[in-house]
Length: 200
Image 1 (cartoon, rainbow, N blue to C red):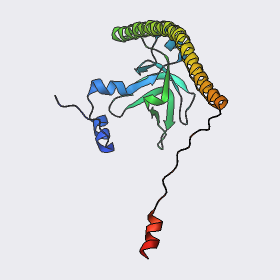
Image 2: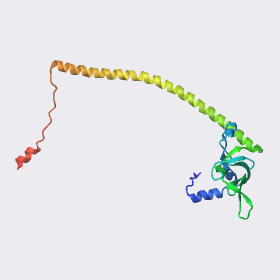
Image 3: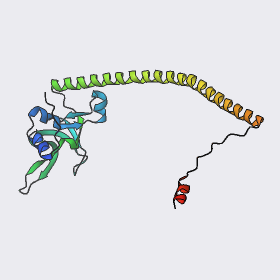
Image 4: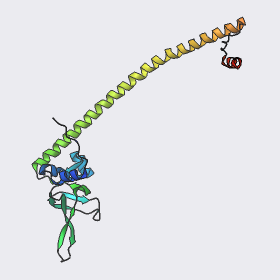
């Protein structure tokens, strides 16, 4: 089977975004969840739905909180209750907001499928925490064992080095006592200069 390469061209990325099927579009509506919901349900982000209470975190309308009245999956925008603007002819319309610029403060749990998703995420988080605890304990035990080994191994090495140095020092002292001067190696002189003079 041929491996799918990641798309790097901006045009292709845009094409994938705007030609995405509905089940993938749904995932692009994910928004971060408030700390209270994160503690209770164990989810960091969830797709925004109609009926959720939401707080705007970016832009001109930052800090505004309201219920989601409509979700536009075609244009990737959501519409919040109370967030409107006046048109030239005097009528009011909802201001579209990107779901990524919003934080969910209250969830709409009327849907049984959404409840199942939250339950699954909570269980997955518990399992991940349990698995994270086990390696930490194992690592602590492993760290203690090598430290003991290192102490045992280092002592003989140091002794050997000292003994080797002492043996060398003893030999040098014996040579001094005997009074024998160290024999120096004579370097062979180059005869190239003499030959050149004779040739001239």
